[in-house]
Amino acid sequence: MPYEAEDRRRHVPHHPRQGKADRAGPPPRGQIEGIERALEAEKPCGEILRQLASARGAMGGLTAEVMEDHLREHVLHAETDAKRRQGGEELIGVIRTYMK
Image 1 (tube, rainbow, N blue to C red):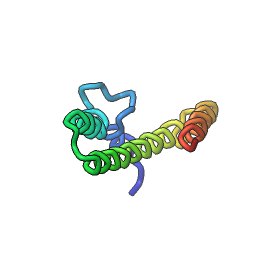
Image 2 (cartoon, helix red, strand yellow):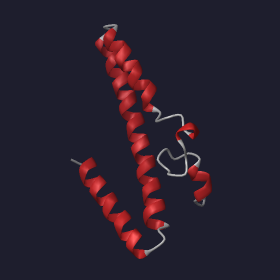
Image 3 (cartoon, rainbow, N blue to C red):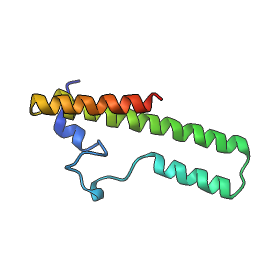
Image 4 (cartoon, helix red, strand yellow):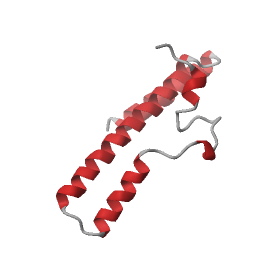
């Protein structure tokens, strides 16, 4: 399926054209709040660990989505070669941090 920039803008959380009212927030937010409630309620460790694993998966998915959007918007479809280089360097920095 070809990349449609206008379609992706409706779904990508950090796109500058979207206002706060247009996005519901990152999907992991509710999961983190659920973990906090489980800890406060002193739920069993196994239940909390399952919630942590689920939140970690959601964060990984969100990270991949934002990285993909950055690559598409700031590298593949950059307006100039200078902006393409800058977008690429930014992504390299993020990947190095992410892989530590």
